[in-house]
Length: 144
Image (cartoon, rainbow, N blue to C red; front, side):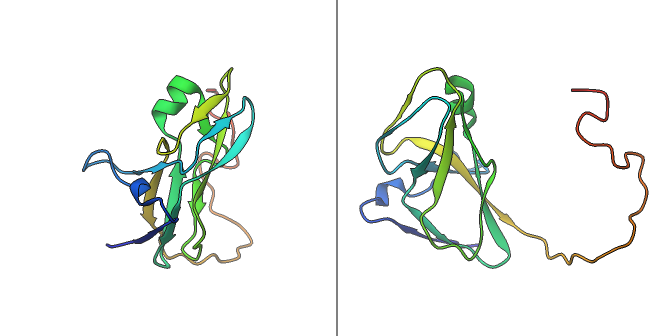
């Protein structure tokens, strides 16, 4: 499967890449220098524009090292890039740390996983089949 990627002017060096051949995700890099303030979400531009086939999406996910070492996560994780979107991919990064975090051009800030979507049809129903779980949701198993 080949997916077209177009880069913002002057950002060819930021082309998404996998660190290892068997990685699931492509690294996304910041195209600008900026500072992430404590307790705030900031849109970090990547310079990446993507053309996905109609039955695909790109999921934008946090980087585990940034989460563990610096308390950075993505506010809308995973973020979804729809097949029809052609604008620049931006990453909404939230700094949960105790000090501002500097981001430099070229820093890896998120991961992008490209996924095929199943073809489904939603149908209206008056009732649903019963299950052992039923309507039990958050915390319903007794474990936090």
